[in-house]
Image 1: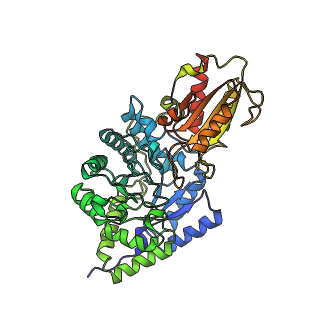
Image 2: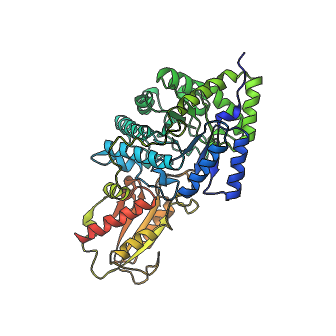
Image 3: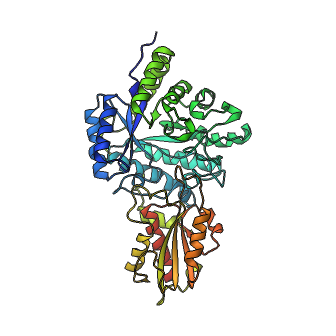
Length: 487
């Protein structure tokens, strides 16, 4: 009979420096350490504070920890003071996309490791297969399976060469959904031949990526009406047996609506299905307790032991867990984030012909979802960086953000980036109406779309695409505009 293991080792607790007070972060960290969690997922915070926190967590833990973060767009996506990078869709449009993807993976790993994060929850290997998908879009390297496989593999190679663990997500693919799994359970009713395209990127990296993440998405043709996270047919039959992936499988965040109200019970089902890292439960103690009982009462001890063995094996690949502080940096030097971002801007330079002169330019921010705040690492309110860059370049600009009084031209900075719980992937009708209202009555206008380039056509205005809402992308848009207007 297999003896139960400490159930906490299979749980990854959240620490939200972006939402919680320092006292609450400290209390949640103490609780996680007391329960013996296997790791933490971090959100937000200054790089220095994050570094101090991860050092303390490791010092006070009785065992090696995985400390992860969602870093699809560079470590600056979460942590202020670290580098922000263009999203995968932007990198995929470059002539040297493969090299750029590998350099982005390496740069992300170096920055993450510098603050004690050794588990990089990236890259997204979902296909950008559904225009109305509310949660993938710019997070994907594109719609072509071979292209996503190539760029995803290069990103993983760059990341893991530096000594961080990458994570292929969201298996078996979140790209065909029209619902947001943060809100409810998306169902993909495609046939096996179509879904084989979604599997291709995961098959391509199965032998090289350290970890994978299951999608909170149901696929009736494979696993009935349950999310892949809870489906042994998908995680066992396809990911393990067919594709041959042998590393730890993480759930997506268990606080998400797709797994239902009782995420502690769902964690037990995820373990039974083949997941070994229970990520971001709503109640860490309840989840640990549920797994404890399942090991004894439901015969899940062998599954728990198997899962922990895979986690320990993955930790052996982490430079931090191996206590190896030296940075390999065997590849090309990481690109300057701003230079790289400028190269990814999509637009027609001719739309800015004659834009200098003595005209006054106003900058107006518009968000496609005012309820969703800016990214954790962003510097200042939407549009302020662009306004400052124009002013520093000698342009005559309106006195304040959003002030169009007396302006001859207006630049609308439109935030339309996929985010959890927002429920839509492109600009909302309200945002499009706000753009039209901002331009109305002004001599000429330009929209800086901080979202996917495909939405330019919906704007009915001259526009450029700068892909995402990170500070670096807004600054890159300003540099692009200044350069185009000077020609």
